[in-house]
Image (cartoon, rainbow, N blue to C red; front, top):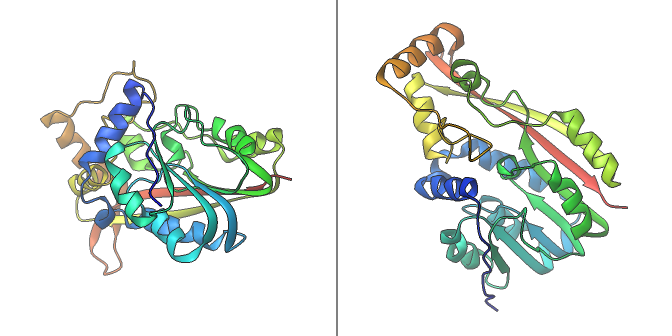
Length: 268
């Protein structure tokens, strides 16, 4: 049974994020690290059979497809920020309730046995608030499972441009989980160094996966980062100087670091 999508007003910052990801039309082809993260999350789901599953920030449906193929549930609620993804997500899960809008503001119901989110929570205005929100949305015994990234994520970009999201530390996540009352808390990090032939290819990759150095501000009042010819030339030169490496074939390259944090906890 097809359910009606719901929407909510988005802040200026969330509109920019939704628009930027909408421009990444070939996201799945380039988002290999994000796909690996989804597969890591899948292996950590405690139960194959669920009463009610809430997925937050489904995007193009990378995690959603894995859930559809591997998990059974009586009820499905799939949330996504960008409205244009609704038909894609509904096609993956015809019986799911698709809720379009800001997960920080929407009423995403309660008594879920599993809340899962892949590659999304870092875009929240207040990522740590996701912990208490999830606690309130979970049934007793329910599992919270999601990933975000550590402050070392995209370390090369932050070092060379000063731009990047403000990622909470592992300690802050653990404190938030303990304060909300979660038990069986586990946090694990996974580092991926993705090689590129040149620094410009790094920027192109980020654009194709919905991320850009002029779209990472955490406040709508922050001045967007602007590229100039001189700044791009300096970026190329300093990237090679500071972050030159060799790929699996022994060829000279530059890396972009993804530092993934997976968080897993249970509401008692």
